[in-house]
Figure 1 (cartoon, rainbow, N blue to C red):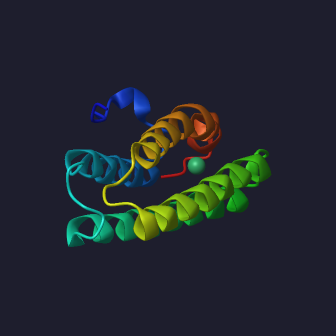
Figure 2: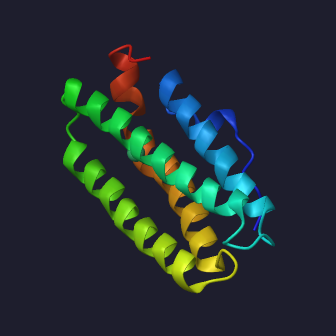
Length: 135
Ligand SMILES: [Fe+2]
């Protein structure tokens, strides 16, 4: 799996959200670069915990902005976040309980989900937030 290199075309038009997306991407890349480290290592358990917390906080930021501006696709968007939360919680639990290394399935899910979510679902709010001057 290749690391994600941030491109201007990934921008969702809201600087604060772009900043959070960049942080998430750098954590994903860190996870890839540690593919040989065991799940028990502090680097990995700490990273998974940090990523999970960061993602929750990021979803909260997005959802609060969508609520504040009455974004029409809020409920669909929220549902996608929820699906991610449940899936990642289950995969992380499974990993910590039964795996020695971070499984390919978890890495692929994380990389695939974020890229797809940012480029397809988040992009849909780009013009909506930009028209309202959200920063
Ligand atoms: Fe989102």
